[in-house]
Amino acid sequence: MIIGDKDEFAVEYSFSDDYPRDMGYGRIWIKNKFIGTFTDIIFLSGYLLGTLNEFERAKELEDEIRQLTKDRLFDLLASGQYEQSDKYLVKGSTFTDDFSIWTYKFENQTYFLWRVMRTDFFEDLNNYKQDVFLESVPTDTLNKVINKLETEFWDKGILKVR
Image 1 (cartoon, rainbow, N blue to C red):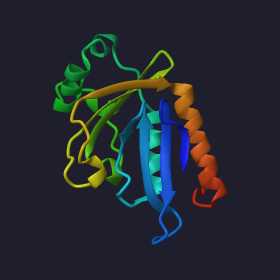
Image 2 (image 1 turned 120 degrees about the vertical axis):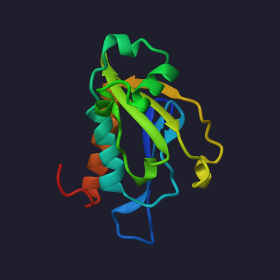
Image 3 (image 1 turned 30 degrees about the horizontal axis):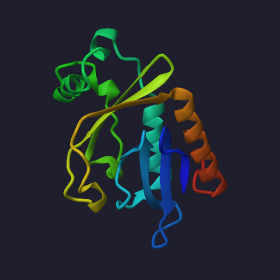
Image 4 (image 1 turned 90 degrees about the vertical axis):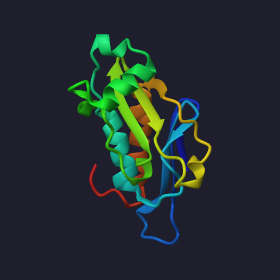
């Protein structure tokens, strides 16, 4: 199942037949690039939705930092040289463990800065480019996809609290 548009922002998920109803596979699409692996079994309502909620809570980034190139910004945040870098780090979960992801907001856009850190463990990551990626989507688009996913999980009985 895909919610949203892979060309802009989407969530892909499927339920596993071999595990309890709230377990399955998921990944997140941003401008036709995915984050996460579709081969790692996860708790969909916890891990997938939890990662999306981290995106939703992205903070504003200071102007002078935001002006850096994507590679320099990634290096600054990942190195810990910027003392506030933790508030932009996406902790994610097992399906995003092989990625280093940072998010921030600016002018009604949510920005995603990421790089895959390991490509040898999951088959769907084997050919993933190890570049630094920076993409943005309208924050309203992000919120609509999250709300639709929450509604689907609620309707299927796997989301207990909204």
